[in-house]
Image (cartoon, rainbow, N blue to C red):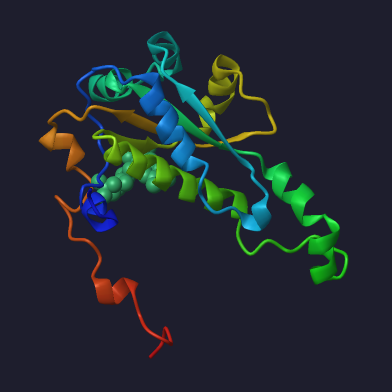
Length: 201
Ligand SMILES: Cc1cc2nc3c(=O)[nH]c(=O)nc-3n(C[C@H](O)[C@H](O)[C@H](O)COP(=O)(O)O)c2cc1C
């Protein structure tokens, strides 16, 4: 059994896949992993849409996509859309136990916690995919494509599309997998990222 740290060493953005299908039960396990993430106030605003229908993915593709991008999206076994329902957070933080803490008003959100939770979920998806012997990559859905994607995938207005996560059997692609990563650029130094006790010390 591999340790978490071994798993982490294998994590990288995979943008090239063999096209081999992945059984739904495996995809289900990956989706279940995402549900185990932390979530602010137990608001449970996360939603996951798993798309394994190649025709839908084909239709989802931007007409301007280049060959490389087309191959990335079409050869992945599935796309997991990480969605969030912001209203779940407002509803939760207007419940009596939360209002008792703040004196009757919904908190001023330090950052959008619904996005934080979606990030945690996408990381769980990613690591679960590796645990299943697969690879994963993440992409943002451009604002200009949002309406079309919602229409195609039947996503209602109260859900925000946070990211798409492709999952599948990784294929070799040294040119691209390594384009924007530690393979081509130095990772920011540990001491620049991690400090102890006081940031300015
Ligand atoms: C929120 C988010 C959005 C991303 N969007 C894209 C994207 O649109 N296209 C892409 O090729 N990679 C995208 N990536 C992947 C990053 O480029 C990648 O994680 C980063 O370069 C580090 O490489 P690594 O994951 O292999 O360590 C995204 C990653 C995150 C977390």
